[in-house]
Image 1: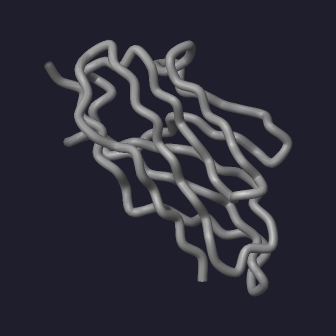
Image 2: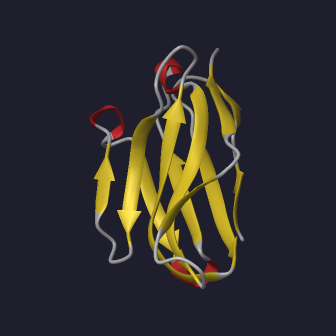
Length: 120
């Protein structure tokens, strides 16, 4: 079994910053990619940022220049540094990872979600 545990969400004022963390644990052989998605009320889940196992990144246009994704491969952890936050960034943020385990070549796994609210 694999678990993704997120932390770091909360309430922040517009223009503020937050850092999300997501740690993967379990029967992990290797992690191909780790990233973040978000879902606002009434909207579909969307990609925020993704990093593969060689450091290539992909960002949603709406967060480029404000958010930065990083990984600590030794800790199986991905981070999302969010700066210059806007009210439209308010959403539940989900960690996602494509992981090879002892039983499967590659499966996607999701965290439980962490709420980010940007409001004055």
